[in-house]
Amino acid sequence: MAFTSDSFLSHISRQPAAPAYFFLGPEMYGRDACRRALVDRFLGAGASEDAFTRHSLDELTMAEVLDDARAMSLFAPQRVIWVTRVEGALPRGRAATAEDETGEEESARAAGDGSAQLAAYMKDPSPGVVLVFDSSRYEFDGEDKARVERLRKYFAAVPQVVEFPRMDEARVRRLTVELAKSAGIELGNDEVDLLVEATAGSAQRIETEIEKLRNYAGAMATGRLTVADLERLVPQARSTTIFALVNALGRKDRSRALDLLDTLLSDGEYLPLALGFLATQFRQALVAREAGLRGASQVQSHFQRMGVPMWPSRAEQVWQSAAAFSPGQLREGIKRIAATDRALRDTRPDDRVVLEEFVLGLTK
Figure 1 (tube, one colour):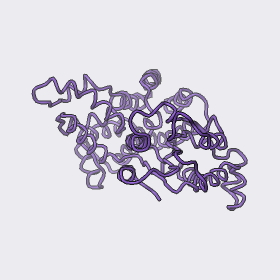
Figure 2 (cartoon, rainbow, N blue to C red):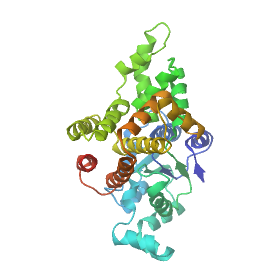
Figure 3 (spheres, rainbow, N blue to C red):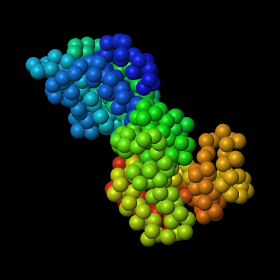
């Protein structure tokens, strides 16, 4: 049974918790809401620290996690065991190749005993224990699709799957308006645009920023925030730093691009998300160049006719990127972004090294 975050919240409010759940997908806002609801529903208020346990399959084997689930606790009659980095359970190297290239029987052998051990546990789960296997590393489409399917196969013994696909821009904007309204904050379209840009479209970060803005808005008579207010109060790693990085790359200004990269790393920007923004910027700029568009207004009209959300500030950014790069440079940039994204998600050197190689390649 597959749940969305909304359907899971409805389910957990009405039904007893299942012995195990598989949380799958990169979106964090809905995941946090589901985690809080599950813990509140199953453990209740005032639960002891022993009642909630975190493990990682990068550090423990499946057998060790299941041994903990079977262990009785004198201090916590009901327990939630949260298992992160479950991608670490998948076979690697030759085993992974065997899984990709052979039939189901060989795939099961390549996966080792972990999947079979989980299946055996699910036939006789420990009462009073809820296991949550949490995978947030992979997207549902593109190059991650095959990895997601391997995870689904490995955790097939857990029938309750909760999916967290990344929110599209339209949904993020609606959520921003709803959260702001709940906090007593009034935002216009320009302010919503800026807040979405400044948080890289992350619903979790938007929620955090709105909570910080609540007190500021509460001290005002109207609760109405302006663009100037947000520029003072909200970090703008994406709307300023990443866009400035695009411009520096367009000028082949290697020194400036490396300085901006250092700013992104210092601000703790989620780098695959930053690369996703760069890829979108390059693709849209390439479309604008190939369509022969002139000016931000034409860019906005063109993409809106295609059904792609495009507001004035975004259209201006796309137009400036289209003016800074030739079509060949944009295509090369898209290829390098894809290669860099793969390097960031795979076993790799330090993130800084990967991103510096990307900048050096585009500014050579």
